[in-house]
Image 1 (cartoon, rainbow, N blue to C red):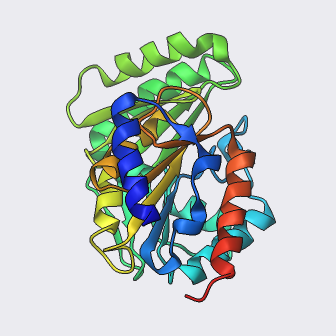
Image 2: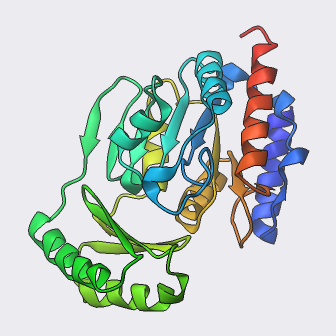
Length: 272
């Protein structure tokens, strides 16, 4: 079977540390009723932007997602660093299962919503120190989410090292915080939940359980999920360059969205 061949490739390429071109993944071998799809948002469905609130998802991509949801009987979820409400806004009218804030919050396919506990007093203290740093350096942006805050330096790349140092100083070894380094951003997250944990939780629930998982993401924050996918013999896709544990790679967001549309076309052409 093609899925069995994918599983052999996963083991081989994970060990070699290499990712095959996404074009070599024969999506004709994926069966709609046996596939669970997990997608990052920024840099995967939406192009990266100067500010987090400036992104958008093409109408054709939203339509492809809707078709994939129907074909897989709802086995499609977004796994992102953004809050769930952000995803609902950008993908409206779609309302999908979502793991938000890198796994700190999650909405199941049944609509149940779960949120990890966060020490709000410690969180506010760190946020205050970082806001003072941002206020002193125009062009930086502190994005605050429940249980997480992200210092963006995309508009001031020369302040990257200073921004990273400021975050480390603001946290100052406080327990319960985890730092996530992304593309022109460093994030402080409360709690221990990860994207990998969220993916594993989805795979224990209907309609995801028992299916072959396919996960796509673009950033270092997706690598833990890529490694978890390898353990459970799924398919992982890295968007863009950089070292990765993913099995397949595509050059950018546009090429991944094109592939996603082709996958929807393939699923539409079958009886499921």
